[in-house]
Amino acid sequence: MVTEHLGDRLGRLRRLAGLTQEGLAERSGVSVDVVRKLEQKRKHSARLPTLHALSRGLGVELTALLGDPPGVPSTGEADPPQLVALRRAIMPPLFAPPPEPNGAERLTAPLLRREISDSWTLYHDADFGRLMEVLPGIIADARFAAAVGNVDERAVGQAALGKALQLAGHLAIRLGKIDLALSALERAMNAASDSSDPLLAPMISNSVAWNYQRQNRLEDAEHIAVYAADSVETEHGKNAEGLRVWGALIMSAATSVARAGDYGTANDMMTTAENATHKLATLPPPADGKMVSVFSRSSVRIERVRLAVQHARPEEALSLAKGMRLSADTPPSWRTWLLLDLARAHTDLGDAEGAVKALEKLRQIAPAWMRHHTLTVAIVTDLWAGSYRPPGLRRLAEFLGVAN
Image (cartoon, rainbow, N blue to C red):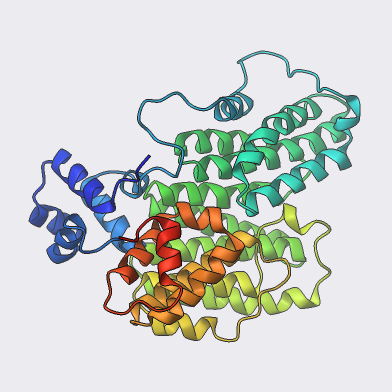
């Protein structure tokens, strides 16, 4: 399936809204020159604040403008069996008792927790196909564990169920199924309220904020993140688990503020979060870091680089990235985003060689992710159309299918 160009999608949505290019520019606060260049395919990508503004002007969710992820088209075709199974696991038959698991041994709390932790590793490795295969069974096992035993045992089972459903929500967002994601996260929040984990609800709030960002509900996303961060800071901010959850929520709120166009406030919030990471070194680490929000000096700096790139500050982005040493617990998915943002920054500065070097590293660690990411294709397309094609660019262009 050929991916629809952003300009084609923008023009189609604009016409459906009954707007001229000038009308869309006025309603969104984006210059008509940008609208024209996108629709004429003289620009192959736009920054996220611009995309959010255009989405508001069109009256659509951000996902409608970004398009579907690879392999998840909204064309009326039937969902693949793996997605059907995931949907059924998230939303089982109403009023039916939870099915018993395949083996009683799978219901031990440590083993169930380990399976969920390993599934989060699959998610951060972007192995979504394998994750879709194993996650429905894990959700079923967790749902059974949440329904049997004494009060304390059920609370532990509810914590496992909430964490598994939170992961299902993240996966659904990645697959472009925003409404399914919200259903999963609502059920995760219900499980969290009856669970043994006081930090689970704030972590799920962060996931809901991300979902709202994808829906262009930036104010809602900011508010839910700040509200959850305040509750964590008051009750749990003195240990590593609580500090990581609080920090991730502050980062999420800052991202929403930045996408709404207020880079200065967002940068201040990110700086506050980064300063708080120094305290992590003085605290005992979490028992299982994979089950807690991603928050470290590396993750904050990666997000600051991203926001700088998205707000046309490539020099600042490269300065923030200079000399950065990624911590061992930085998920692979964060590393891939950093390389992509660096490639964009180099491209914006006219440094084709720097962009190609970053993209070559990206291809080494995440070739499948790179091939299917629209921004990667857009960057290489822009480089290929330039007057200078540095060594390695042809291989990348051929790999992504954009070479003439």
